[in-house]
Image (cartoon, rainbow over the protein chains, first blue to last red):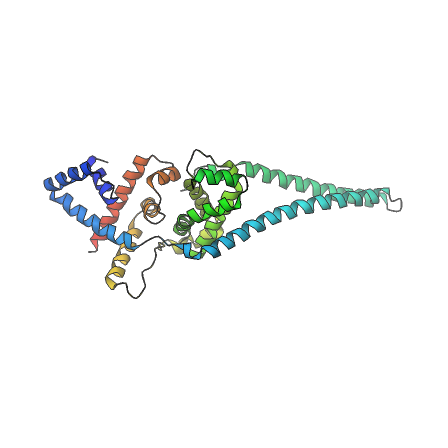
Length: 146
Length: 175
């Protein structure tokens, strides 16, 4: 990018200092093509300015309430999940204890039940470990895909 | 209020500070999401998800860096990885999300100019479209674009200049 291009860019951005304005004026005097280009840039600027960004701020109340509800529900589900895991673990432990102590239940049924619960526990730990590993890899700190 | 003060408060769980931050960046976030999703409903959804992910990951935020480019990366990733975005990719290719000018008082000439600009924008490659969109519709500063795209400010200035030059050429061709 040469000096003239830099000045033209600043002209578009309306970011020229007084000295730069004079410098650009001198360039225009020297080169009629530059003057024509700046006029065309004005036309482009005019039409770009017609297209203001979409402003969702008029719907702020709805936006915030919907966002807040999503956030709150997310937190709610996490708390509920933790509570459910703790409760189920406690109840499961009590249940197993009762089953193992019960002499009327056959040994194979006891082994089957313990295997079932042990399998579920391994699956749960495996999923949990995967989730923890994923959460440690912060995808947002990496460069985004282009 | 300065972003760093708000973020410090958010890190301590201050919902009021979070609300202020969302309000401050909602317009930009929405317009970034709109560029990538090409759909107002998806943009609404993706920008909100971006804010939720930001809340959840705010502890990892590097306080030395500006906030919006970080949010921009979250929103862009969210948009690109969303199922909706993938599914509609083909049908969206030729549709840039520009605010339509359709109120009765606006002239036909203006509408024609806007149409021409939209057509000219569609002729640009994705890189040029993106940088013009980030600057003019998401209203990001050079510094923010530089952080978001991980490029020096000088490169951003240069890319923007050539993108606008190409846009101008395409726009004036139809005149």
